[in-house]
Length: 106
Image 1 (spheres, one colour):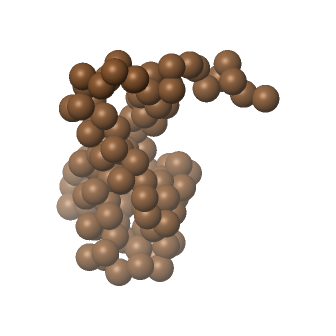
Image 2 (cartoon, rainbow, N blue to C red):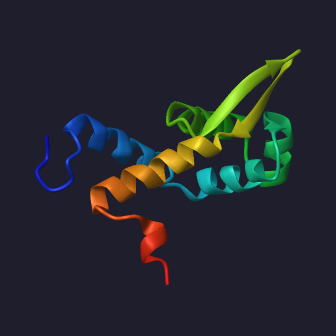
């Protein structure tokens, strides 16, 4: 247990993994595209102008971090954002900081 945040090392590692998953311009572009609605790999590939293997690798990283979910529909996989994952990340940050970010907004 860390003294300053009250979070266990395990919880802090999970928070670090979340930040790591967001540490990529392409991943942020993927999240921005999915914020417009669910999509499949082919549509994202065309929209973002990246190769399918690269896109799939980044989608896997985002899925493992919990920011994106995937659902097979027939022969395709549909990807969508998981808004609760972002809410959880904010709550964890607030826990580390010891205050609500909404309360400190100017």
